[in-house]
Length: 326
Image 1 (cartoon, rainbow, N blue to C red):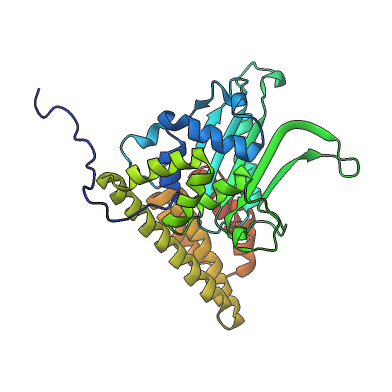
Image 2 (image 1 turned 180 degrees about the vertical axis):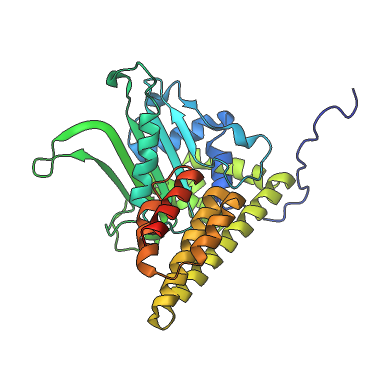
Protein backbone atom coordinates (compact mmCIF):
# COMPACT_ATOMS: atom_id res chain seq x y z
CA UNK A 1 0.00 0.00 0.00
CA UNK A 2 1.35 3.40 -1.01
CA UNK A 3 2.96 5.38 1.77
CA UNK A 4 3.18 2.39 4.14
CA UNK A 5 6.95 2.02 3.85
CA UNK A 6 9.39 4.15 5.77
CA UNK A 7 11.23 6.66 3.64
CA UNK A 8 14.86 5.84 3.07
CA UNK A 9 17.65 8.24 3.89
CA UNK A 10 18.42 10.54 0.99
CA UNK A 11 21.79 10.64 -0.66
CA UNK A 12 23.19 14.15 -1.03
CA UNK A 13 23.54 14.41 -4.81
CA UNK A 14 26.56 16.67 -5.09
CA UNK A 15 30.04 15.69 -3.99
CA UNK A 16 30.87 18.63 -1.72
CA UNK A 17 34.00 16.95 -0.42
CA UNK A 18 32.53 16.53 3.08
CA UNK A 19 33.83 13.54 5.00
CA UNK A 20 32.78 12.57 8.50
CA UNK A 21 35.47 11.90 11.08
CA UNK A 22 35.53 8.16 11.83
CA UNK A 23 36.56 8.83 15.43
CA UNK A 24 33.17 10.32 16.30
CA UNK A 25 31.51 7.47 18.19
CA UNK A 26 28.36 7.57 16.07
CA UNK A 27 30.36 7.16 12.84
CA UNK A 28 32.65 4.56 14.38
CA UNK A 29 29.67 2.40 15.22
CA UNK A 30 28.16 2.80 11.76
CA UNK A 31 31.39 1.49 10.25
CA UNK A 32 32.36 -1.23 12.71
CA UNK A 33 29.10 -2.10 14.49
CA UNK A 34 27.03 -3.20 11.49
CA UNK A 35 26.63 -6.88 10.58
CA UNK A 36 27.02 -5.96 6.91
CA UNK A 37 30.53 -4.66 7.62
CA UNK A 38 31.66 -7.38 9.99
CA UNK A 39 34.78 -7.97 7.92
CA UNK A 40 35.96 -4.44 8.79
CA UNK A 41 35.38 -5.09 12.49
CA UNK A 42 37.34 -8.33 12.21
CA UNK A 43 40.20 -6.54 10.46
CA UNK A 44 40.33 -3.95 13.25
CA UNK A 45 40.21 -6.57 16.01
CA UNK A 46 42.89 -8.64 14.28
CA UNK A 47 45.18 -5.60 14.15
CA UNK A 48 44.63 -4.60 17.78
CA UNK A 49 44.74 -8.06 19.35
CA UNK A 50 47.46 -9.41 17.07
CA UNK A 51 45.62 -12.58 16.10
CA UNK A 52 44.68 -13.92 12.63
CA UNK A 53 41.35 -12.89 11.12
CA UNK A 54 40.41 -16.56 10.96
CA UNK A 55 40.20 -16.62 14.77
CA UNK A 56 37.08 -14.45 14.53
CA UNK A 57 35.04 -16.86 12.43
CA UNK A 58 31.48 -16.91 13.78
CA UNK A 59 31.87 -13.53 15.50
CA UNK A 60 28.55 -12.14 16.79
CA UNK A 61 27.86 -8.43 17.21
CA UNK A 62 25.78 -8.15 20.37
CA UNK A 63 24.63 -4.50 20.30
CA UNK A 64 24.05 -3.31 16.72
CA UNK A 65 20.42 -2.27 17.33
CA UNK A 66 20.90 1.52 17.39
CA UNK A 67 22.05 1.69 13.79
CA UNK A 68 18.60 1.37 12.24
CA UNK A 69 17.22 4.83 12.88
CA UNK A 70 20.21 6.90 14.04
CA UNK A 71 18.23 7.41 17.24
CA UNK A 72 19.20 10.47 19.27
CA UNK A 73 19.66 9.14 22.76
CA UNK A 74 22.15 10.36 25.34
CA UNK A 75 21.97 6.97 27.00
CA UNK A 76 22.48 5.22 23.65
CA UNK A 77 25.07 2.48 23.48
CA UNK A 78 27.71 3.64 21.03
CA UNK A 79 30.36 1.09 21.91
CA UNK A 80 30.67 -2.11 19.88
CA UNK A 81 30.37 -5.37 21.81
CA UNK A 82 30.96 -8.77 20.27
CA UNK A 83 31.11 -12.41 21.25
CA UNK A 84 33.42 -14.96 19.64
CA UNK A 85 32.45 -18.51 18.77
CA UNK A 86 34.40 -19.62 21.87
CA UNK A 87 32.27 -17.34 24.09
CA UNK A 88 34.83 -14.58 24.69
CA UNK A 89 33.38 -11.07 24.87
CA UNK A 90 35.11 -7.98 23.46
CA UNK A 91 33.97 -4.41 24.01
CA UNK A 92 35.37 -1.60 21.84
CA UNK A 93 34.74 1.97 22.88
CA UNK A 94 35.97 5.18 21.28
CA UNK A 95 36.19 8.25 23.52
CA UNK A 96 36.71 11.79 22.24
CA UNK A 97 36.36 13.82 25.43
CA UNK A 98 38.88 13.53 28.26
CA UNK A 99 37.50 11.29 30.97
CA UNK A 100 38.68 11.36 34.57
CA UNK A 101 39.46 8.04 36.24
CA UNK A 102 39.58 6.26 32.89
CA UNK A 103 41.40 3.17 34.25
CA UNK A 104 38.89 2.85 37.12
CA UNK A 105 35.98 3.38 34.75
CA UNK A 106 37.42 0.75 32.41
CA UNK A 107 37.74 -1.85 35.15
CA UNK A 108 34.23 -1.13 36.41
CA UNK A 109 32.63 -1.74 33.01
CA UNK A 110 34.93 -4.71 32.36
CA UNK A 111 33.71 -6.27 35.62
CA UNK A 112 30.07 -5.79 34.60
CA UNK A 113 30.74 -7.49 31.27
CA UNK A 114 32.54 -10.35 33.04
CA UNK A 115 30.03 -10.99 35.84
CA UNK A 116 27.01 -10.68 33.52
CA UNK A 117 27.96 -14.05 32.05
CA UNK A 118 26.94 -15.90 35.23
CA UNK A 119 23.31 -16.89 35.75
CA UNK A 120 21.80 -18.42 38.93
CA UNK A 121 23.02 -22.00 39.24
CA UNK A 122 26.08 -21.51 37.00
CA UNK A 123 29.59 -22.43 38.12
CA UNK A 124 32.74 -20.37 37.59
CA UNK A 125 33.48 -22.61 34.61
CA UNK A 126 30.86 -20.56 32.76
CA UNK A 127 33.06 -17.46 32.85
CA UNK A 128 34.89 -16.67 29.61
CA UNK A 129 37.61 -14.18 28.82
CA UNK A 130 36.53 -10.54 28.48
CA UNK A 131 38.53 -7.94 26.57
CA UNK A 132 38.08 -4.18 26.75
CA UNK A 133 39.52 -1.96 24.00
CA UNK A 134 39.63 1.80 24.61
CA UNK A 135 40.41 4.02 21.61
CA UNK A 136 40.85 7.48 23.09
CA UNK A 137 41.51 10.99 21.79
CA UNK A 138 43.38 12.01 24.94
CA UNK A 139 46.40 10.70 26.81
CA UNK A 140 45.59 8.10 29.45
CA UNK A 141 48.97 6.69 30.37
CA UNK A 142 52.49 8.11 30.82
CA UNK A 143 53.90 5.33 28.63
CA UNK A 144 55.78 6.13 25.44
CA UNK A 145 53.52 3.78 23.51
CA UNK A 146 50.68 4.30 21.05
CA UNK A 147 49.08 0.99 22.00
CA UNK A 148 49.38 -0.60 25.43
CA UNK A 149 47.81 -3.81 26.74
CA UNK A 150 47.29 -5.12 30.27
CA UNK A 151 46.82 -8.53 31.91
CA UNK A 152 46.87 -10.06 35.40
CA UNK A 153 50.47 -11.05 36.09
CA UNK A 154 52.63 -11.73 39.14
CA UNK A 155 54.80 -8.72 39.98
CA UNK A 156 58.27 -10.31 39.98
CA UNK A 157 58.03 -13.32 37.69
CA UNK A 158 55.46 -12.09 35.18
CA UNK A 159 53.47 -15.31 35.67
CA UNK A 160 49.94 -14.88 34.30
CA UNK A 161 47.45 -15.68 37.05
CA UNK A 162 44.59 -16.05 34.56
CA UNK A 163 43.88 -14.86 31.03
CA UNK A 164 40.29 -13.79 31.74
CA UNK A 165 41.31 -10.10 31.80
CA UNK A 166 42.70 -8.12 28.87
CA UNK A 167 42.57 -4.33 28.50
CA UNK A 168 43.90 -2.23 25.62
CA UNK A 169 44.45 1.52 25.26
CA UNK A 170 45.02 3.12 21.86
CA UNK A 171 45.93 6.78 22.50
CA UNK A 172 45.51 8.74 19.27
CA UNK A 173 47.16 12.05 20.37
CA UNK A 174 50.45 10.16 20.73
CA UNK A 175 50.54 9.73 16.94
CA UNK A 176 51.81 13.33 16.83
CA UNK A 177 54.73 12.51 19.15
CA UNK A 178 57.45 11.39 16.75
CA UNK A 179 59.64 10.29 19.67
CA UNK A 180 57.25 7.43 20.35
CA UNK A 181 58.42 4.38 18.37
CA UNK A 182 56.03 2.90 15.83
CA UNK A 183 56.06 0.84 12.67
CA UNK A 184 54.13 2.85 10.08
CA UNK A 185 53.32 -0.38 8.23
CA UNK A 186 51.85 -2.10 11.28
CA UNK A 187 48.11 -2.58 10.84
CA UNK A 188 47.16 -1.22 14.27
CA UNK A 189 49.08 2.00 13.57
CA UNK A 190 47.40 2.35 10.18
CA UNK A 191 43.96 1.96 11.76
CA UNK A 192 44.80 4.58 14.41
CA UNK A 193 45.92 6.96 11.66
CA UNK A 194 42.69 6.29 9.77
CA UNK A 195 40.55 7.08 12.80
CA UNK A 196 42.56 10.20 13.64
CA UNK A 197 42.95 11.43 10.05
CA UNK A 198 42.61 15.19 9.65
CA UNK A 199 42.17 15.11 5.85
CA UNK A 200 40.95 12.96 2.99
CA UNK A 201 44.49 12.89 1.62
CA UNK A 202 45.77 11.02 4.67
CA UNK A 203 42.99 8.43 4.40
CA UNK A 204 43.58 8.02 0.67
CA UNK A 205 47.25 7.22 1.28
CA UNK A 206 46.30 4.70 3.94
CA UNK A 207 43.73 3.15 1.58
CA UNK A 208 46.47 2.48 -0.96
CA UNK A 209 48.50 0.58 1.64
CA UNK A 210 45.67 -1.29 3.37
CA UNK A 211 42.75 -2.88 1.51
CA UNK A 212 40.62 -3.10 4.65
CA UNK A 213 41.04 0.63 5.22
CA UNK A 214 40.16 1.20 1.56
CA UNK A 215 36.84 -0.55 2.12
CA UNK A 216 36.27 1.45 5.32
CA UNK A 217 37.04 4.65 3.39
CA UNK A 218 34.58 3.72 0.63
CA UNK A 219 31.91 3.11 3.27
CA UNK A 220 32.76 6.37 5.03
CA UNK A 221 32.23 8.28 1.80
CA UNK A 222 28.79 6.69 1.36
CA UNK A 223 27.80 7.47 4.95
CA UNK A 224 29.01 11.06 4.55
CA UNK A 225 26.61 11.59 1.64
CA UNK A 226 23.60 10.28 3.57
CA UNK A 227 21.43 13.24 4.53
CA UNK A 228 19.96 11.67 7.67
CA UNK A 229 23.33 10.40 8.85
CA UNK A 230 24.87 13.83 8.28
CA UNK A 231 22.20 15.49 10.41
CA UNK A 232 22.86 12.97 13.18
CA UNK A 233 26.60 13.55 12.83
CA UNK A 234 26.30 17.32 13.05
CA UNK A 235 24.05 17.02 16.11
CA UNK A 236 26.57 14.72 17.76
CA UNK A 237 29.44 17.10 16.99
CA UNK A 238 27.48 19.99 18.49
CA UNK A 239 26.78 17.94 21.59
CA UNK A 240 30.47 17.08 21.98
CA UNK A 241 31.48 20.73 21.52
CA UNK A 242 28.99 21.77 24.20
CA UNK A 243 30.31 19.13 26.58
CA UNK A 244 33.89 20.17 25.97
CA UNK A 245 33.03 23.84 26.49
CA UNK A 246 31.35 23.07 29.82
CA UNK A 247 34.34 21.00 30.92
CA UNK A 248 36.82 23.74 29.97
CA UNK A 249 34.69 26.36 31.71
CA UNK A 250 34.57 24.23 34.85
CA UNK A 251 38.34 23.68 34.80
CA UNK A 252 39.00 27.40 34.30
CA UNK A 253 36.74 28.24 37.23
CA UNK A 254 38.58 25.68 39.33
CA UNK A 255 41.93 27.27 38.50
CA UNK A 256 40.82 30.87 38.99
CA UNK A 257 43.28 32.49 41.40
CA UNK A 258 43.65 29.16 43.18
CA UNK A 259 40.64 29.94 45.36
CA UNK A 260 39.06 26.98 47.16
CA UNK A 261 35.57 28.10 46.21
CA UNK A 262 36.61 28.32 42.56
CA UNK A 263 38.07 24.81 42.70
CA UNK A 264 34.94 23.48 44.38
CA UNK A 265 32.73 25.07 41.75
CA UNK A 266 34.88 23.61 39.00
CA UNK A 267 34.81 20.11 40.51
CA UNK A 268 31.05 20.31 41.01
CA UNK A 269 30.63 21.31 37.36
CA UNK A 270 32.70 18.33 36.20
CA UNK A 271 30.54 16.01 38.31
CA UNK A 272 27.41 17.59 36.83
CA UNK A 273 28.80 17.08 33.35
CA UNK A 274 29.34 13.40 34.11
CA UNK A 275 25.76 13.06 35.35
CA UNK A 276 24.40 14.86 32.29
CA UNK A 277 26.27 12.60 29.88
CA UNK A 278 25.56 9.42 31.83
CA UNK A 279 21.92 9.95 32.90
CA UNK A 280 20.61 12.95 30.95
CA UNK A 281 17.73 15.13 32.16
CA UNK A 282 16.82 12.67 34.93
CA UNK A 283 19.90 13.82 36.85
CA UNK A 284 18.97 17.53 36.95
CA UNK A 285 17.93 17.50 40.62
CA UNK A 286 21.22 15.87 41.63
CA UNK A 287 23.14 18.36 39.51
CA UNK A 288 21.53 21.26 41.35
CA UNK A 289 22.39 19.59 44.66
CA UNK A 290 26.04 19.27 43.67
CA UNK A 291 26.24 22.88 42.48
CA UNK A 292 25.17 24.01 45.97
CA UNK A 293 28.10 22.18 47.62
CA UNK A 294 31.08 24.43 48.38
CA UNK A 295 33.17 21.95 50.39
CA UNK A 296 36.02 20.87 48.10
CA UNK A 297 36.96 17.88 50.28
CA UNK A 298 33.37 16.60 50.23
CA UNK A 299 33.21 16.94 46.44
CA UNK A 300 36.50 15.04 46.16
CA UNK A 301 35.08 12.17 48.22
CA UNK A 302 32.01 12.06 45.98
CA UNK A 303 34.23 12.13 42.88
CA UNK A 304 36.25 9.15 44.10
CA UNK A 305 33.08 7.04 44.41
CA UNK A 306 30.62 8.33 41.82
CA UNK A 307 32.15 6.53 38.84
CA UNK A 308 31.50 3.17 40.48
CA UNK A 309 27.74 3.73 40.53
CA UNK A 310 25.89 2.06 37.66
CA UNK A 311 22.37 3.38 38.29
CA UNK A 312 21.04 6.87 38.99
CA UNK A 313 19.54 5.60 42.26
CA UNK A 314 23.01 4.52 43.41
CA UNK A 315 24.43 7.95 42.59
CA UNK A 316 21.62 9.67 44.48
CA UNK A 317 22.15 7.48 47.55
CA UNK A 318 25.90 8.07 47.42
CA UNK A 319 25.52 11.87 47.27
CA UNK A 320 22.89 11.97 50.03
CA UNK A 321 25.01 9.74 52.24
CA UNK A 322 28.05 11.97 51.70
CA UNK A 323 26.04 15.09 52.53
CA UNK A 324 24.66 13.55 55.75
CA UNK A 325 28.17 12.57 56.91
CA UNK A 326 29.51 16.10 56.30
